[in-house]
Length: 274
Image 1: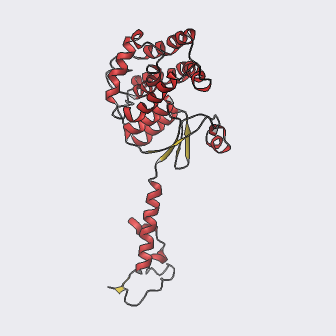
Image 2: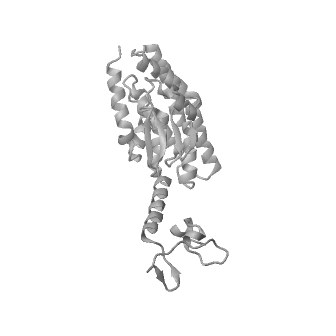
Image 3: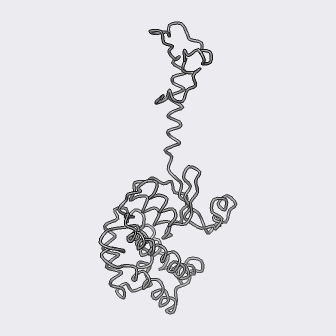
């Protein structure tokens, strides 16, 4: 089997001497050696350059359509960092309705973030993206153990966050950003009841699903970064949840890089609410 750059060439380009091969390329005088045909220098440079070009694009990072401060986006970004997977971020400006543009709707008809485009393959929904990254880059990762019961607990946590808790979370945050309104006491109470208590139910041990860091923890931390540090809630009301959050943050070497800018921005916006 041909290997390396020669595998890209046709028999004609290889100067094959097989009787059934196509005619040989013209060989310049002085390029014969030991009965074999040698490539002209320019042609060799072309082949090597082409291989480098192909390898460059094959190694291009996947594109993540992102919204700064979004817990689902933070979840995907933290997982990619954890796995050592490079992503190219493309922030989507919701204020300018870029999520409703014809171009974006072609890749995500539900006009949400995050959306991953990996060499033309499109995946949306943060949980689906997380599973895709794990299966492609780290199928044996401890973040998603092989034990079917452990996986069920992780899947349960991710599903509860996405389908039950995040809708209430979004309901609380939307008026803060779009209407610049401070939350009422009733809204804060509802947030604590439907969001923070929900997260607290999901913390069962030292980590979310046991005594080891898993995908569930990456998901929870991405949400707690804005739910516990937004300036409206008293974290002391939820000591178990607050202790869990402070315990897990140091486990994520990339926490400050991914979440600190969003926390700082959120707290600034909160101070400006009317």
